[in-house]
Image 1: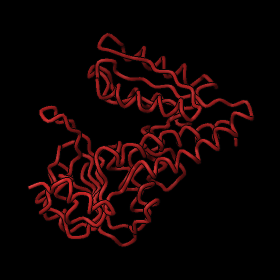
Image 2: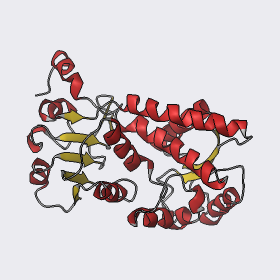
Image 3: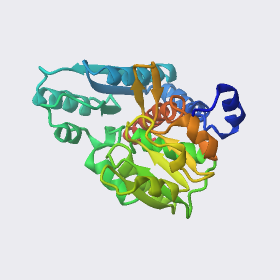
Image 4: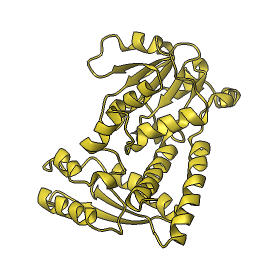
Length: 295
């Protein structure tokens, strides 16, 4: 049974607030952008998004709003089922060659008839602020400076902000996508964590969870991780996001009201990794400006 709201208040010290961490990052970003503006450089982000995908449009709206708030210009190109792969690649190439555009990213998913890999590969690696090109992922694998996908970068920022120890800890990553799981595993290995990656074919996932000091989950499978799967005092970082329309509720992969009873620290959904992810995209745009202007 879920804990009552009155009981939830007693667990407030366990909650890892994404808002606090995101605000900290954005203050640093704003200082850098103000310095760019004094040099006559106006950061600009260019985005491709599927116009019929509701959640994608919500995500992009949030990112554009934050960009505008920080002083970053933006342009959004909407695509649909009538858009051709060649037309989209041409848009990206035009942005690649435009010195006034510093960051380019494609909000996934895109229409099924379009080759996602070919579109992503068309992005200039120096403008790949979502860290999805093979160049960015390859550099990350070889411990080179690289753009990192915003969501896994957000997890690391959260860990640093709250001083969560990872060295020698058993970390379970649930979900092995190029957007979250794979880059996050590489980043945590750099921090000397003992990393296990789980996926749809993992046998006995509950036991893997119970063995973990830290669980990072990003599957979009609503509330499938329950209290009895979690080791006492484990840290839970929930990157998952789902909408349950029947009860008008946004949730993560973890049953929050149960998990908070046994976890030492836990991110809420919403209000956890989400705000930090947006901040991390903005930080990548700042890095792109510095790279392209030798700052």
